[in-house]
Image (cartoon, rainbow, N blue to C red; front, side, top):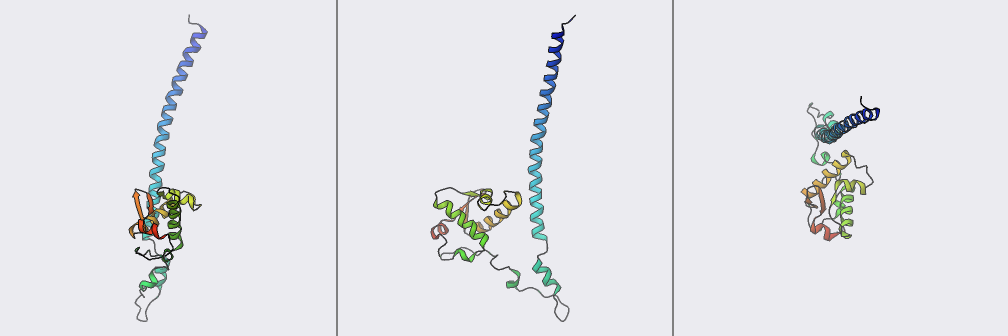
Length: 177
């Protein structure tokens, strides 16, 4: 007849194996959950961007309601279509940062400060933190969109994917022009 201690040790070993198996399964499920959450966040961001691009703009909707005397809709003039200072001009020597909206100026100032301190490029998450914004995907993607627009117009350089610095000539002007 087996001893009581032997039976307890055997049951303890069985319970320990079950706990270890369950922990492994929980770790796998947790890893899958992390991947699924990241994927879900990407879809939320994509849906948001598509909504911004395809959604009616308040100015466009308002202009669609206006009609000429012959019943034809009034098309907005190009100057009416753009909101003041929302268009980012191509960078050229002597162009002041004042040509940009405040949001774009804040990005340039943060990168200029970082450049002055001898620090490297800045990510959009780091920019969000600099501006006191929550580093949630929506805020970070809005900053990324603005930074990419500044890159396309020659104000910034994307030295590595997602890492932005001032363009060489823009850094030299320091926003004073």
